[in-house]
Amino acid sequence: MSEGKLPQIHLISGGSTVRAEAVWDHVTMANRELAFKAGDVIKVLDASNKDWWWGQIDDEEGWFPASFVRLWVNQEDGVEEGTSDVQNGHLDPNADCLCLGRTVQNRDQMRANVINEIMNTERHYIKHLKDICEGYLKQCRKRRDMFNDEQLKIIFGNIEDIYRFQMGFVRDLEKQYNKEDPHLSEIGPCFLEHQDGFWIYSEYCNNHLDACMELSKLMKDSRYQNFFEACRLLQQMINIAIDGFLLTPVQKICKYPLQLAELLKYTAQDHSDYRYVAAALAVMRNMTLQINERKRRLENIDKIAQWQASVLDWEGDDILDRSSELIYTGEMSWIYQPYGRNQQRVFFLFDHQMVLCKKDLIRRDILYYKGRIDMDKYEVVDIEDGRDDDFNVSMKNAFKLHNKETEEMHLFFAKKLEEKLRWLRAFREERKMVKEDEKIGFEISENQKRQAAMTVKKVSKQKGSKEKHKTDRAESSRNCSEEKDRRRTSQRGVSCSKSVPPAYPPPQDPLNQGQYMVTDGISQAQVFEFTEPRRSQAPFWQNFSSCHWHPRMLSCLCEFVIEVSHGLHW
Image 1 (cartoon, rainbow, N blue to C red):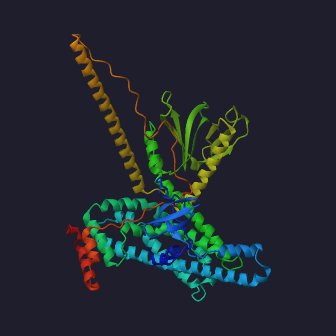
Image 2 (image 1 turned 180 degrees about the vertical axis):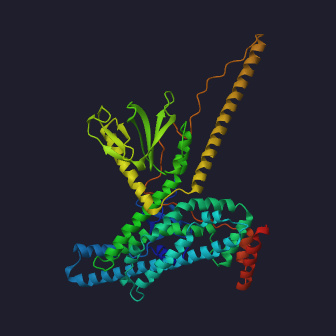
Image 3 (image 1 turned 135 degrees about the horizontal axis):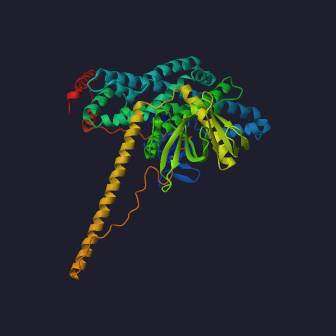
């Protein structure tokens, strides 16, 4: 537990109300755990355990991870109520000046507390980034026998770019920080001036899952465990595993909206920093939501790859070569201009392209690939009900896709007007998504595509294994039944021919589950959810850390371990 939390935790034992704000969602099915969403305010009732606290939301009580929340900087009771009373004129008119003075003084102190917390966390964060770059990455680059460039790119991402950006950001914050009167500091403009620079966090957050998987593979080898632990000790870093340090940038970008919201809460509207803080809060909230959305899309690419694998007769490039999100899907009638024949198809609208499929006549959950439309080359044209001269047909609930270069056209008929309107909204959403992705340079890395392909192979292998197990079990059951029948008939002196096995239905495709929709169970606005970093150590390092070493001796020993760790097996 950090030192900053201790004074507020001591308030609990004295009967004071201590509140915390959820940084991430805590999703749980356990009876004695407290579920909440990011942004919820929790009343902390017991914080004697450093990892799990007991809290209350409305009438619900339960345990929750302490790492999932941040304590309010200002825990004073009754301040907000006092402010509200002054604004609403409910106080004694004779005491207006005295109460208003106290309220303003308390509000200034609270704003100073928030400003000081922002500055302290920024300085502490800079040290974390420096430790990662110099303590881990710099040492890894010296060991070409253990790490190649691709591995380092996956593990550390663009952490050095973030470090350089944060140093410039903190430098400007320090210029705006008023040490004598922190509440007078104007830090809102700093966030607005650097708003474009914060987008580098998107690349890091998108890569974080790959970094965790790569580290997990390396940590199976004791050489890497010893190497990373020696790096930590040599840099004199706190006792957290490397994956815990690599998580801090993800946590940081999620924390900015919470800090700015609290700062705005205690900033008077006539304060010179008010409108800048309000604008900065809107910018950082929007940025965090978009980063979360792109993170969610990358987490769902496995589903898209699995869906493509379930479509029969697939031709051309993979979906993931150009797209990362299924925007809308549905069944419509379709006419392509050169042929003019009305066909029923199932359409899947992704960013950049729309895939056409045909249902199997018997198994309606089976799809056949029938082509795709490049959405970057087409524009959507809404059509009023009536007769169309181009296609020479009567239309209702129709729209067109028109290629400006080749003049090709596709005509679509929805069953209902509501369905047509949903398609038109989906096409607008697709264009908006493409423009936003181009703005921030969002794309799926080759490593992520390979990982998705490996997942598809793994699922297909498991599917084949399950089908074989079912077949073997059915065959074994049938043989046992035949043996029993043979014994019974032999006892009666009657010969028995081999019986016909029952006609088992084909196994259900686990990728389709009787549907052709690519399901998505993750909320658009869901905030990142992370677990507490691993803190377990090997017995050697536990004993090693508990010893009292001379700094010079410790430094020499750690350097020795880093140099020869590829030949050591503790």
